[in-house]
Image (cartoon, rainbow, N blue to C red):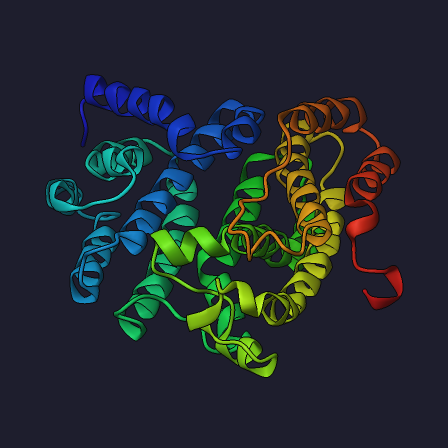
Length: 347
């Protein structure tokens, strides 16, 4: 068992590094009540450790699988967490993410200070994510190349859907206003909520993933159906075909985001922190997908579509003003979705 000073040092490290590796989610998680916020923070960092291993640009697939095995054991074995931190010294990639993995032992020390029931939720769903990542890196040892829409959905379940279930289980455990009925409703929509955010991230990062992560998530069958291929996904002379191939994923994202709105509105109004923590990434995703729809040539130009800082601030402020009203939040979603959305009759 960790000593009090060691536990405090571990928690301090997690608080310090979190904004460096969490992008827009840092703001959302700060809105959660203290114990729940800590649980989500540690869970997120553990997921980010797994993601960093998956994205390592040079590591052979067998070595990644070995690190995933060590990461899985680390939930129950202090020595395994230390081994993971030590082995991370040879990894390459984003320096901030590497610093996180090289201090994986501290993240697990903080995780072990959570209540037992909370640890069980984190352990169950993060290990499910790790198992899926391990499966895909071994299936595609030269870089992930998703082949079909069904395989795309399976991948999104492992890397994102699991997170939807994880946070929903944590909401239920830590928020008294989320009783059995509300929990069942949230469970029905939580996978779509998380996978919508994942699909939007994939769509905006196609060029970066292909060039820097050696990963292509746009299914080969969609590209070939429209006269392109993963080998030509960034080719200017295939821009029209690639845009057509991406359209089904855009439609999937719109549908999942609309289901994610149902998730948001099902969260009791008394759970203000949770509502805000879910509203912000949902609105950011809607705005990003809207801009992607309005800029069909962005992929061919290898642009990264990002919403403006002023819109981020505006959405954050309007969310805080309207968080207690489902009507206000639904109106904000409609306003953010804008003219780029899939027509309602197609949804």
